[in-house]
Length: 533
Image (cartoon, rainbow, N blue to C red; front, side, top):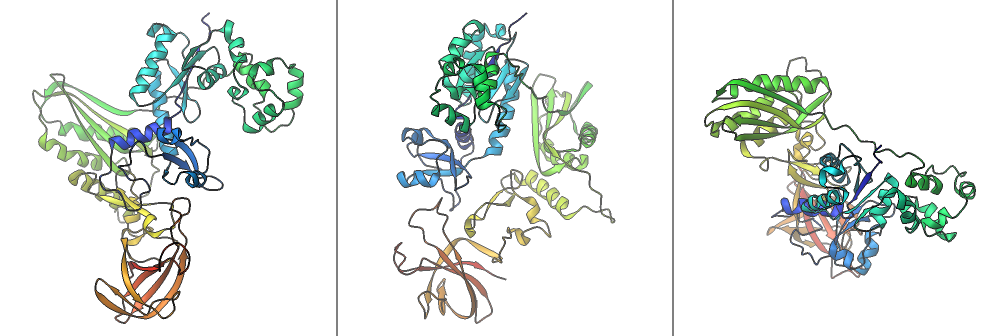
């Protein structure tokens, strides 16, 4: 009987390496003025990715320059900025990291049939009976390191008889470790107790008891460990249970998820054809029927045309929202045939939904027309297909109370909120409606104005904007907005916003930046930030 072998892949810089790879593949030539990280910051600039914490953003991943300065994960961004004012912080994409790790987990089945994600930055594989295909376990680990290195990932690898042992060796052992059953107990004994995947409270208790190594736990009677850690009921993963899992006394199988269903229709032709368009509606119809049975809709479709000489021509189209309308999906592909070189003809046609989303069935209107959001998404799809995906953009809300940071614009097919453009959407006219009343038109960058006011901290009486004077007839305010202390510099000043109406009836949104005597600069400046209807 073949002994069970488990491989663990740990990528300690997974989130940061993925961010750097995505950034290098899609640079932004014109960053938004509110972006915290300029696209041209060099490798010597300390850079971190942060997540929301109980007391402000917490560092989730660090760059090489930040690590060289001693910045570690789990530290609050505001604390690090006090010691390193040049720190650049951006929000981490946890959902994107999880999706990328899921795709990488399926890709890792090139080494064995069973794989599963292991935490937020690791993969576990059941390689029992598979290592001989790579010339042994050492050759398999070398291939893993090389292929993941091509993806920009640093790896620490281990193979052991159990999942717990492989995880411990990958995180606290060498760069590549192979452990066999006869030497497993001795190898684990030299590792710290943190290698048993225990929670922070348990590790703190063990350190207070002087138990620093797994060998120290092995030397204690099992009954003693069970009395101390097995009866509080706070956690099921006690030191004794984790130790038994690592040594193989308790089972810990690798739960390998089934790969996602592939929605693909293929038509093999008896004779080559030069025009594939007559065959495409039928394939689209069958594809949409398959997705309808599972309650799914396509966000991206791909058409592959196989030439008789072995070449393959592929086209791809994206949608603003999930769709399984065969006529609409076919129209997105129509313009691609205008420049198609058929050559000697095609003998196989394949259409596939490469990205899908859940789509519930919706009842059509009584007059037979489409709902406003469906019509808007259809229009966006057609315009994007004709003009290009970057030419059609939609607003995307951001978590910020600063007006110019509250939203940004993204391609409608790649993250933009197309529903906000539909009649009755959250932001009529394409603007994201916040909780308070805001101007219909918000200037991307506030423009400086000259003001005349009677009280230094009160509203202005007159102001001049773009060389034209205005006399204020009435005003409302102030509405005070404090700077985002976790993101802005220490010298950032608060804002007092006023809604003012001038003599000709026009209404504007003004704000004063700073207060006289606040110690953060000279006299306060006035800006015009928006225009009401």
